[in-house]
Image 1 (cartoon, one colour):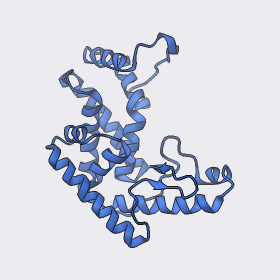
Image 2: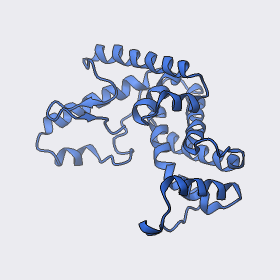
Image 3: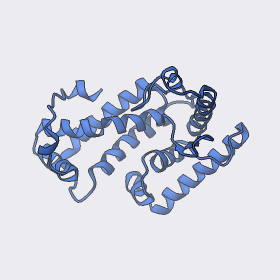
Image 4: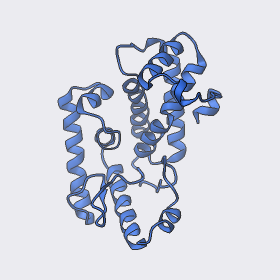
Length: 228
């Protein structure tokens, strides 16, 4: 991925020597705009996993997600001098990555989603997760439900899928989604709720009712977002 393309050989500083997260990111952006590759590489290290996870959930293909992630960061690198500092860097970066995913989805016919359990951050292989739990039947049921949710999300139109991704998985507000998609807030809400209605309809037909993309464990009652 990006660590190879831009030679991200950045040594981590001790925790106490790092400035506050927001200040350090702004400093990296300014430095990158002035041609500092190391500063841009730090931005890549901070955001590459989230951008890859977004791309993977949107495209549901690990190789294509890697390509889309690299393309997004290359475009960001080329356009960093045009980034306006009064905006959020993350919003700008998500916009680039989202456009990459939408473009790729529009160029290909709909495909059935694949299993991506081993690809996402903090995602262990299913066999390891099951070995770590006493109640394997509960884990298997939850995994099956998560697979159904992924299939349902993958069947949504690309713009609705992206709105659901940004709202549920990236936990953005509608105002932030509006900025990423460059549409009015009302349009962002419309795409999300249309996607949510499509999910409810499809999941209802498959036997999972009254649950969004997160799956709740019957044992704990805690919200599980699954591996994607």
